[in-house]
Structure formats: structure tokens, C-alpha cells
Amino acid sequence: MFETLTSPAPDKILALIALLRDDPRQHKVDLGVGVYKDREGRTPIMQSVRDAEQVLFAEQTTKTYLGLAGDTAFDTKMTELVLGDAAPAARVRAIQAPGGSGALRILFELLRRARPDATVWVSDPTWPNHIPMIEASGLKHVSYPYFDAATGTVRFEAMLAALAQAKPDDVVLLHGCCHNPTGANLTLEQWREIGKLIVEKRLFPFVDIAYQGFGEGLDADAAGVRLLATLVPSMVIAASCSKNFSVYRDRVGCAILLAPSAAEADIAYAQLCSVARANYSMPPDHGAAVVRIILTDPARRAAWVAEVDAIRERMIVLREGLAAALRKHSGSNRFDFIARHRGMFSRLGLSVEQVHRLRAEHAIYMVDDSRINVAGLPDDRLDDVARAIVAVL
Ligand SMILES: Cc1ncc(COP(=O)(O)O)c(C=O)c1O
Image 1: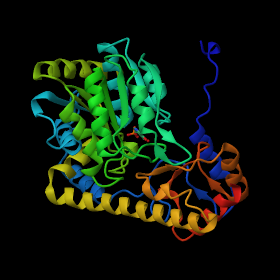
Image 2: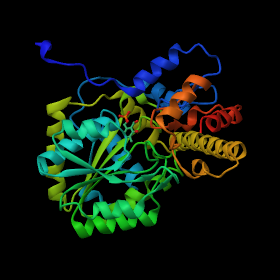
Image 3: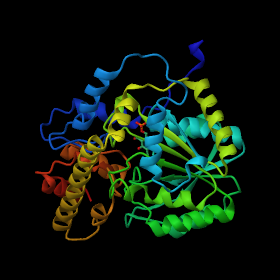
């Protein structure tokens, strides 16, 4: 059987983790892996999550099946967290999914059932997992220009011009906030323009929101997706709780859909449940129950919001610190965009060779495309990091 298979291409991030682990240098700096890290380089369990786990432990009386949509109170709360009151509840449906990845995958499959010939337009660059998921669901994909590496900004005019070429019912995949891997994000005015184009060309928006709260704030980070929901008749959203609740391994996500009418929403929802049934059947409960406990209790929710705020503020301080250190050591404002970017990542615009030199000569690890995880920056050694980056330019 297996003799017909060949090895898949190695995962670059996993390879980077192994290299870093085997590097004996004490001062090594990990800017690679996409998880939040605190000052000590740990990815701690949030206090609000620990507290909710105690509640769950005390209250849970059964582990019987919940159903294809998972914890429906979680689904309602997640819809509120992402959409606020931007869309009428009658036209919105949601199902719990195994992580943002699970939500992406079942939504792509739903779109495949609805429009087998649709092409998904993805940003260049995008989160590398988007592409295999689109391919595995049987849809085609093409990229639209997004990032100008020289200035660290969004190529908005080029993006609009490309999307103007899309066919009706083509899918436009947008990062809700904190673009991965670039850190460059759309302004609200740009979201509005994209919404207008989507309506005019009868395209279908798909928003992937995996870092809500890590950019400008929980509501500000959802402003684009909420605006879009007021402009378009239908859309889908994949939301991840991995980062903003720090429940990575518990696999917590939500697939949300907006339809033109309640009747259409019901059918799309039933189809989405059937896609889930044919995949993993039901999502894991633990993490979603924890998120539901937090979001349904005002005091717990406030404590969680404070933790998310602290994470975001730390990353902004690190951004400003690194941008200032790079200005000092390079004598130029070339890297000022790091302070303007938002979210966990920034793409520095270095060549692969420069990235490899940083690794070999300075023990600074980042992905080959020069994406850095800002949370991995050592706050007491920003000057060292900046000096090393300038040394390889
Ligand atoms: C852009 C983007 N979307 C979705 C995800 C999905 O995350 P998870 O499946 O761990 O919830 C990630 C995680 O890194 C991401 O960066």
C-alpha cells in the first residue's frame, strides 16, 4: 500500500523548531514559532482560563455527545464576540469547530458544495496553511497582491485591481486583523472599499480571524469584518480561540455564516453540519466549554479582556522598542513599519540569505520569509537583535 507514497515537503516551521532546540548557544532568540510568549519565553495558561477550568471541573456531570455544532452557547457567544450586533441574528448561524483550522476547512468544503467552480483569492503572501486547505477541499486558488516588502505596507490599489478581475461567486479570503505573516493590515476605509467591490462584482467574502484582540483591541480588530457584514448579503468567517484564549492544543474555533435570509441560513447551516459529520463528526468540548464559561460571565469576561489587553500592550511596546533600536543602529527609518504593524507578526523584508546569516552568526531564528514573532523578542536585548539585523543587511 504505502509504497505508492513519497515523502511530503518538510514543514519549514517544524524544521526551524528542531534547529533551535539543538542550538547550544545560551543567547539564542526564537522569533519563529507562531505562539504568544511572555517575558520569560513561556506560553502560560491564562488565569481566566484556569479559573474557568475549575468551574468546568466542578460543574460537568457528563461527557456524552453534544452534537455536530458542539456547544451552542459557545457558538452564540463567539458570534457576538466577532460580529457584535453588525448582522441580524436571523441570518447568522455558527458551529463550533476544531480550531480556526477546522473552521477554515469545513467552510471551504461548504463553499465547494455550493460553488464547485469557484476560485479562492488569497493574499500574497498568506498563512501557508490556507493553500493546502483550499486544495484539499477541492477548490482552486489564485493570489492577489497584498504586501510591499520595501515599505512594509499594503499594496491596496494593486489588491483592488486584482480583485476587480474575479468572477461572480469567487471567494475573497481576507485576514480579519493582524495579518499573518506580514503584520500589515487594512484600514476601515479600505475594508469599506473592498466591501463595495465585493457587492459590485458579486464576490463572496471569507474572513479568517485568528488574532482578535492582538492588534488594536477586541472590538477594533473586528471592525473590518463587522463593517463587511453590514454591506454584503452573505459571507463566512473562521474564528480561532487558539491565540486570544491561549488554548492552542485544546482546538477551539468557530465557523460562522451569514446568509441573505433565515431560510438560506438554515440550509447552509445544515450543510455545514453535514460537512463536519463527514469529517470529524463532533468538535472537542473542553476548550470551547471553557471559552463559553468565560464569555457568559461578565466578571470572568472582564478578567479575560484584561489579560488580552496586557498581551497586546506588551507586543506594541516590543514593536516600538525594536523599531527605535533599528532606527538607532541602521541610521534609517527603513524598519519604522514594525511599530505601525499590528498583531503577533511582522515581515522584515530580508532575503533568505540574510535570515540564514542571522541564524548562523547571531542565533536569531525566524522563518525564511523573514517573518518575526514579535512576542519572542527579548525586551532587555532589543539593541542586540537590532545590531544583528543591521549587521546582515
Ligand atoms: C491566519 C491564521 N488563521 C488560522 C489559524 C488557525 O489556528 P488554529 O487552528 O490553531 O486555531 C492560524 C494559526 O496560526 C493563523 O495564523
